[in-house]
Image (tube, rainbow, N blue to C red; front, side):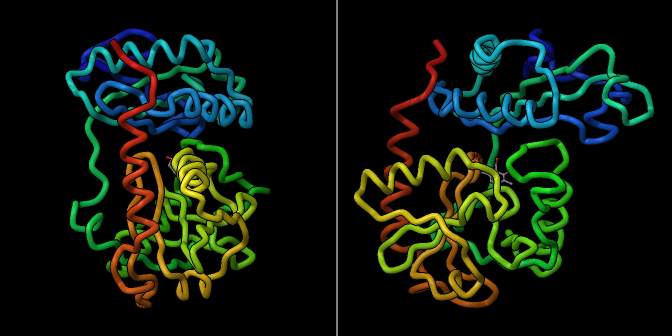
Length: 290
Ligand SMILES: Cc1ncc(COP(=O)(O)O)c(C=O)c1O
């Protein structure tokens, strides 16, 4: 496997970064998770835009232009033996000293791009739905670390993931400090109630998911009403359907939340329709790697 390390394709064993890199020492950096289907990189421009926005928010200068970053992704996927896969793009503040001051990272930001396989959940959960649980760990406040920034500091999400695993569940519903539903640990959350597709408003504290946006667009083309608003746990428990969205997980049905069966207990018709549309779209669009 070849890894793109600062623009050079190097074997996996040689793709190493310094122990003085502030991405490792302080979680000082940003990242993206992108999929490619039949060598087409899905929503690449959107992911690159989000990467540069995350970097801007933390005042991290990415050493290459967006156009060049797109080319680096194409180059990495071209070098991969995989037709379908997952890309992890990471930009770190770079090598500094042991103080956290980013100004001391004098060599500037470093980046790497990995193209590999990924599998999030076993197939049975896509067929029967996930059982998820609310956790005590709150989604971080936008005033502290805005969930819109896809930073290398994922401890908030990781601790929620550990907490739900401790209770025997595979995924967590994260609530914000005001008690409203924000998102799952690595996915956005949707419900279907009264025929409308409803998802927490971005101000509840969630990543501006690219799959979320895609699903909203698909629902609109299917003439399904889409609502973005504050949701409580009651809204989830009483929904007809529920599903999670994310680049890696794609669209995964949820059939139980905190022990409450959602709808009929089986993935619902709207979820099925959106999954089918999403699958078709991933085959149709994307940046082609020749
Ligand atoms: C916290 C969080 N929420 C939601 C998502 C889903 O976002 P996307 O659909 O852009 O992958 C992700 C994955 O990137 C995530 O890490």
